[in-house]
Image (cartoon, rainbow, N blue to C red; front, side):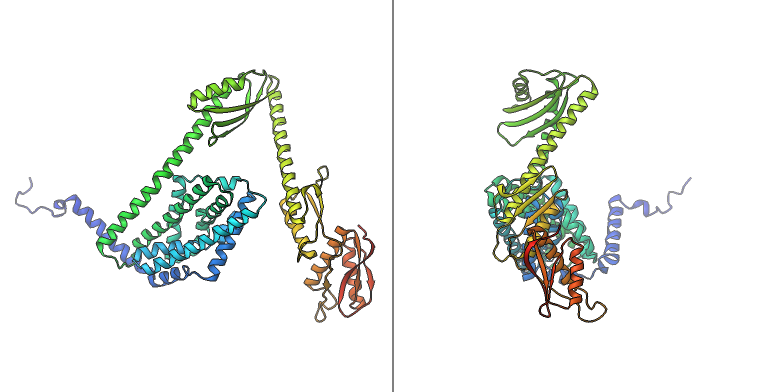
Length: 517
């Protein structure tokens, strides 16, 4: 038996909450000594302050990022939009807002807010002007995807801000590239400009909410990370608690509408499944729903469906409309296109392939229309002046003289359009009589007697202009050997120039006659 008078171990006499407090104290001591003490706070703050200056470079890069973003959105090009995200310097002042809040430096806070305001207004104004004067003002898929923010967008901004603030504090700023892409600050601003230019307030409000969600979430998360890493604050304990309370309230205020938006998206996804089920019930069990498009924002809700069925169903639209209205509890405008197919699986698949091919051809027609409009725009003509050869996938247009545009400008425009239509041959014919370039040759060293890089580019331009205009050229001036060398290079491009003596400099000039192709 144990001795009742023996001392009781003090370890078993410690309350559980006391043990928990000891663990927390030990962890906080380790954090202060092993983690926060390794951070050079002065260097981090100095770097963050520098990125918050309203400098000419900051304003220029913000404007250029906005211009690239809106062009990428109008072209529905994710690659161009990503490039705009990488150029955007908006992350600097937003992170600066968070650090300024963390240490209670309100002069820095005002500086960051001013930089953010000026940069944002400049980007919005430039995007508005570009869209206002653009012939393309349609809501592309890239624009539409930034008009319905939800709770997931807030979570993306939260996790990205945690990663970004950590990288900045720990000096691993290479991570910021990924953070810039994830948070996508500039594209929503560009969409705000699009909404202003087109007076589309639905687009404007949705994009503005997405931008504000990203901005506020990043700033407040940066503040919390700075606090966690021990950045000293000049605030009193009461002010700090009030600040923490405001942060929680702001996050809740953002989460409520974004969560509601996410719920609506979920309801629409569930509604689409129900609509497909109702439509399928209208037809034979061997029928297939090839395509169902639903516009939930329309009033009434618009449903367009394509059905492959062995038996055509009369009055299917009227019956389907009544069924969908009962199910959704709101008016529905239903359009059904029925394709009669055989009962075999192969027949159904063949019909589905035919429908897909018809859709592909329609998309091709739309792309050709876009190509004609783009070529007409850069050539200064109407779309009717553009010649399209669909069989050979060839587009030809003769440009009108544009103020200040030389042959190199027309060549560059052709290359840009050709890059967007890689399966087409694009021929932009410059106005006749444009001045041909001087062709520079190396006069010393191992490259003596050979064209310089500028000279080779000039020869390439001469060959391009000769083919596009159908005119021949002469090489005038320079040493005889240089003329022979230049003529050989042009001959490799199927252009046979006339060689003429002249001054010490060689230049290309137009002559009468047709070029050899």
